[in-house]
Length: 548
Image (cartoon, rainbow, N blue to C red):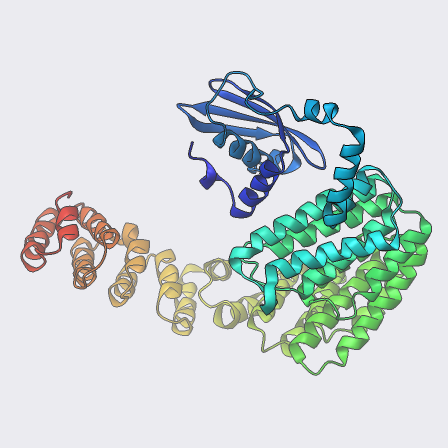
């Protein structure tokens, strides 16, 4: 069977690990249907449908698969089937030894001695065995678990302390197994604090590990840590919840790499909604604002301080703080454009339009170096003036947009057009045309105004095939000869350098389109004859031309 290309690489790795650990059980192989159970932290049922020996449909009842993805449980079953010597209608394969019977017949002392010997040599199995037996976790146990995390990191990072692209998926698979089996096993056994400590240890070490995670391994593992934290929170008592809160707060001190701090922030601010925590978070968020305001780097200062100020304001809003308190905090931090944008929206929602206008006008000056932001301020001003019925200010703002902040924007252009009689508009639009750069921006305006002679000139002046194709429909009936010549110039330029078959296919597609024009058939024949002489040694090109 050919099926592996349907799976992401890291999913294949995890599926192979499940298969290798004999977690695929209860296999039933029929002619066109394979059913199996895959054991892990949970038990999932997998079904594979076949047609002519190839996979046509895969299903699994795990959450990942229910979201429409191909999961590790499916991959594990398919790895198993690939390694069956011959497909049989009923399983189990009787050539395999019956391990249960084998163990049942063995001497009990021999088994105990054998198990002791294995557990003494393998810390991972010892941890797993103690978890199955639900023994309490000792400091020595915790040390072994931390060693297990360290060993995974060291084994994949090596002496250079870097996990390359080819090792990243296996590295992530091992840590995922640790989180899935060991950490969740602790949660099932009620060892919530220990599970929290080890998850934190893994998260911090993951953040400090240099890795090529082009496949998103760091994000996947961080998300798993968040899910585990969430599970622990659901079961935690008040002292543990307080300890968790404190850890999340203290870990936002810059010791975790910036993009991973987002996970900690989300945990802190999406949870811990009790009054005692809210009060602390309000103090903490304001402290963060003051800390980042002292930063020398203007971008870092503006982004980080603004982000924390918004956190603070949102909490005030959730707590139904007085409008005066909200306004005062926003006014105090208007230097951060995120706060200004929030405050403007807040004022608009309250219909405090005069205040919103003042903030927007002031913002256009304060943020004049940020063109996108100034454009947004101008658009909001335009909408407010229109809603208030201030026609003069509305018209002025439209002119500011069409001449400065959104040159060539067709929607703004047409909105302004509605304010003028037809003859007067013909004069006013020339002001706009003179301000807009030649190219696609002005071409859209010419097309909208049906100024096809000017639009044609833009197309003829542009070296771009895309410009020709964009306005071909509007111009074809009026100027077929000019457009056909433009096409000829473009395809001749495309054909000069030797290239690959795909490029020749593109050229032939353009030739087919040229044949739709009056005199196009004859023009294409002339071009093809010329090329058959000039480029006769280009086999791929000649082959594609023969398909015309």
